[in-house]
Length: 180
Image 1 (cartoon, one colour):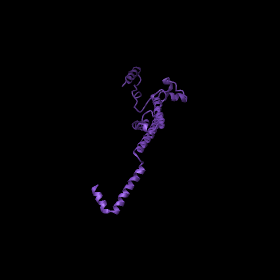
Image 2: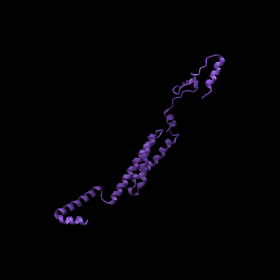
Image 3: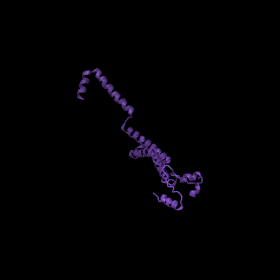
Image 4: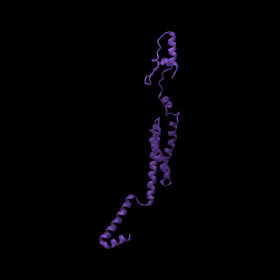
């Protein structure tokens, strides 16, 4: 609490005026509005588009601008890997890129200031990572043998042979089932 009300009381008592306590006490919901003449501050001049960008919270003066610029290097490196064969790509590395892109894309919409430039680069990082992971997984599946469709066909023909044998010789099929 300041000493101002007491000072006003003694000043008013000396001059013979009635003390005014209530005029200086304001509730938290009231506030005194100062005019431009009282503050001696000139109103801000309108800025050009470049100066608004340059002085913005995500402008080139901040890390919020330069971090996405550097991260585009990861995206471009991933795009350059599209030309490499899938056997020479690392699954764990590309899964890390994919996860990083997904997590940070979401996070860019939560943090303040909201940085859409950083969200865009992280989204593209997720897209590049998921494309590479898909290429690697398809390559690994092709090394194991046939595709899923041909594996299903093989399993179906094996089951059809078992059913045909059971229809021709039910007792033999029962004995084979007991042995297995």
